[in-house]
Image (cartoon, rainbow, N blue to C red; front, side, top):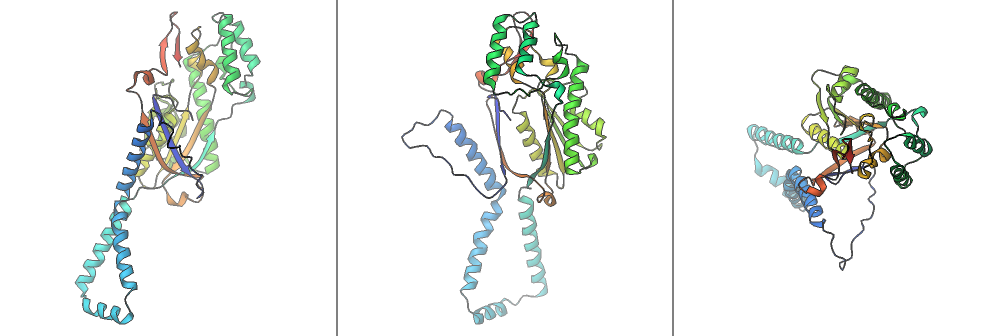
Length: 354
């Protein structure tokens, strides 16, 4: 996933006990300007960890001290200690109740583990493939692109790292492209339902078992929402907790995971379905502004569906376990706020300026 400057997020998962070595910066090197922000993030993370495990930090030293003291006593001292207590039934019941209460409080205060059971990505058909040659041939035949814009898009494609197997939705294969609301909905249904179907098939989970649904798509936000579209298609339960995120940039995928994680902390024995996509059909830019031509070259067709769970019985089959999510929002900075901006160019064409 790609995180934009205006809202960057990071998540860490655990697959094995092996920890890679951490590179350290020499003491003579100057610290980067964002080091204070990075330090603040990890200070907050450490504080959250301390709050979640406060009972552990309080009781482990106490229990360890008592055990060490008992280990240093001989059997006769242990017998005399036992006889000196003179516990009656009421004292035993009160002590047992207190221990059960402390244990319950401890286990309730611990954060619930969040497992990534499985995920699936949409793979477009071969008919949607757009090699560089096809893309450039179409661009040269469009009247709203001059030769300078065509050459610019070719340079971006060559440097983008995209391969010859990337795909665009059917509406963008026409000359000129013919975006419409129905074509946009059709792309959304195709990419989202295909990814979810693959996920359900791989995990053998039923739609009725989904407790939480989080969908993110930044630029295409129809009514009814994409989350409602999924609920209608799969006939999900009426008490499902559903959320639809839009306008949050490329980092919305990790923001969705963060939201699902928070919901799984307060709703035990639950499954969360996270769907992340970007619908390309309605966002083709037909102008000559270079900053707005970039999305035409960089964004392609796709979707991902992720199944998260806090059920401990899913630990064995889960691919990953979520350790933590840290998010830093830079929206207060005007430069970061406008780094991805939807606007009109001088000719009135709507596009995404990067």
